[in-house]
Amino acid sequence: MQLFPLFTDLKGRTALVIGAGLVADRKIALLLSAGARVIVGAHAAHPQVQARARAGDVELRLAPFDLAWLDEAWLVIAATNDRALNRQVADAAAARRLFCNVVDDVALSSAQVPAIVDRAPITIAISSGGSAPVIARRLRERIESLFDPALGALAALAQRKRGAIRQARPELRARRDFYDWLMDGPVLGALRRSRPEEAEAALEQALGRNTPAPAGKVLLVGAGPGDPGLLTLRGLRALNEADVILADRLVSPEVLALARRDAQVIDVGKALGGPHETTQARIHALMVSHARQGRCVVRLKGGDPLVFGRGGEELQHLKRHGIAYEVVPGITAALACGAYAGIPLTHRDHAQSLTLATAHRRAEATQASGGLGDGQTRIYYMGVNRLPVLREQLLADGCAPSTPCALVENGSRPSQRTVFATLDTLASAAAGHRVLSPALVLVGEVTALGAELAWFGQMLNADATLPDADRLQASA
Ligand code: SAH
Image 1: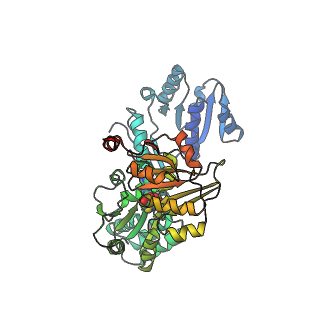
Image 2 (image 1 turned 90 degrees about the vertical axis):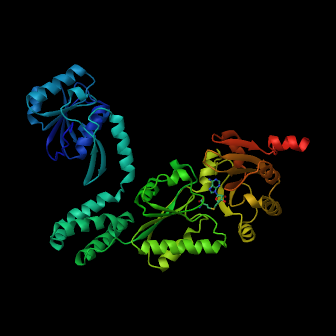
């Protein structure tokens, strides 16, 4: 081991910081968060440090470094940009057997400040021994994304209940099982749902019984539109927790690749050859049976799970069967396609409302919303095979044939294509370019801005409706 990790209790103890620039200020903030009493010595101080001194958070000594300051300190940090001075501080600290960290200077440091993941009272510290701080920072980001923010609350609860747990589970083995159950079971879930009383009640109830097997649950997770960067951190954590993943056809392989390696992935998106209802019934049955066996089931859906994804029906089914669930939203196709096609969906000069509609159930939907007036953006899901019908409907509703439209195919994926057209030309342009599902239809003035603001993927327009090969054939 190159460095000995040590967690120090600085509450009420003095830390001496030499230097009062922004680098020093970051260390000062860290020391203060650990409850240290901080003395800052420097020739001059950054306004931020001055403000801390005025607020009484630190004691600022604007004077040359004084050896006597070391008498008060448990820990010394040198953070000036003068290496000779930093060395002098480090040497003086060493002479008194005080640990000294010189910021960004491994050679002069007898102690290093690690990269930190803070889930107080849990603290994770990462060190690369000064060899590659960037790697430590990257690791920190990864770990940060993996651990639930509710973990801190869980640890705090466990700390409060420590005596009761010890009493109810005097044997080490049984106690360990109990803590395992705490990590996997409904207590953490309740904390994540912001229900601390429920969490405490579940813990107390479990103490009275034999440690129950971890209860199964379903996490209904939005995988976003395809780009794995658009998965939420909470979604990523769910994928890391999953025992079983029921994935939709629309979920991209890049997102699935982020899942726990030993999770069982079941592709429920494939048509079974039977009617759609059969597929849905099978999904309902799989969720319930896996959860009943104590597993963590992630039901992974493209975009957002509650936007045209039948997620609502799945929740109702779980509720009816008494299965615990959580919902993790995702970036829905409308928002992703707007962003990735450079279409500001509610640009204030052009749109005051935004409607998300399905191109199916056309009759009721459009009757309810009426025609497309000025200042509206309307987005149709599942519309690519119904463009001629959609066009007729919108024209009948009084929408001008010249209304700008866009069709975004494979939004946010490397294969994204955007067709800019008008209501009149959209259907033929889509046919000419052979646009396939998944694609989103956007209607309204704002779509015209995309022609100027687009920044991702391929842009096509209504004129070049025939790909080159077809045009050659057509003219032959
Ligand atoms: N729950 C999903 C929508 C499911 S309905 C969401 O919130 O995005 C399926 C329809 O969504 C597709 O027919 C298509 O219209 C649209 N869609 C989904 N992903 C898309 C993508 N990457 N690009 C374009 N359209 C997409």
